[in-house]
Length: 357
Length: 123
Image 1 (cartoon, rainbow over the protein chains, first blue to last red):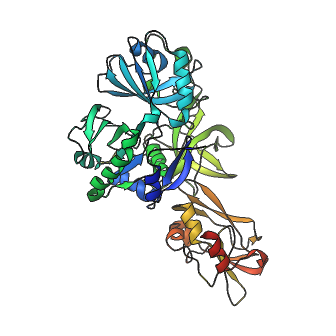
Image 2: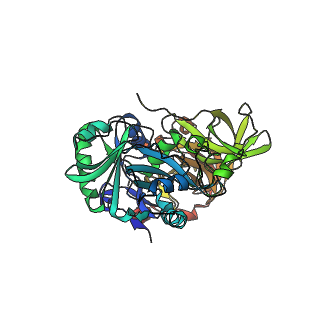
Image 3: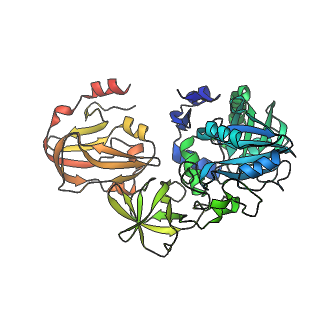
């Protein structure tokens, strides 16, 4: 049975088209449609329900040592109030999940994980943690709203006077529309934006307040459909596609988040070896859209498979990423097999779309 | 959801208009375009192709997915609406104006349902 986020009724009211995602019933789009919602975030401002995300707290004398051992990034120099993206790997270097780590105190971290991986992640962390540390899954008590787009700060300004100024920083115990929240300047769209974590029961109140405050800027609620096209245009990975239990972060081109000079962490040895595949960005030259799991060819030789493929509303054309054998040069003529038709594809650069302004 | 009285429909949400000269025009319904969302590509068949009632004859792609379109009747393609290649959004804005193909030698009308029944199914 799928779970509902605290905003389920709000989605019905806004005529959201409900689908199952990560074990939750969430809107894939609202009445405006994916194209309009996508455009709102790129050019103006949009709001997402991301309450399905999982939240963990790790606290204690050995908390820093634990996050440095469990995750691939290095948190030693992460300042209080700072946020850092990381991967959690298996010993073979493949991926358990990707996540965000917030430093609340010297010895307290807030960890945000994918909804679909929450149970697996919790068990993984519980069985691999060590020393003097408390670990708790608080996901069910937390709601989360993302406000994204070049005009997001104007909306947030109307609801609080405590605004994190730098990208990837946060403020805790902030009063936002009358409720206590944690607010970070983060997001999954490639635009400026904020993510607001609140008590589960306060989420509908905040949703409605953001809608009201955003009305004068044309803010609209946005669904999972454009969340995917936005993150994909920005070159951001999605677990289950670019990262998985059979794909390592090094293959996915996320080496900058894997700190091999760190003392020891799960997956270090495997991740130190040369990769066999690399994630590459393509645009489809012929008419048609490549989706995930399409075979990619150079002439008649199979060289890899797509991980995500979609229509890019910003570029107005089909784009995809693929894991390609590492020794295949990008100068080649590529094609992608879409339902039996081989479409011409051209190598392009990450990100597909750069931030507005 | 708009359903036009003078057309026939299928349970898979295509419409067909029977013209007096015996030919037929085919498209997808307002309900279908609403369910599919913003359409961004159409893969059309070619003039001269034979289509069979109930079988896939072309597909449409939204941002999120590709969906088959089934022939409401059997026949031979006389004309293809090439305009849809460059303006697939017409399927969303004007589903009953944005036809896919014109068919000749039409047969196999048994699957068609009336506007009244179709309306009942999509309510």
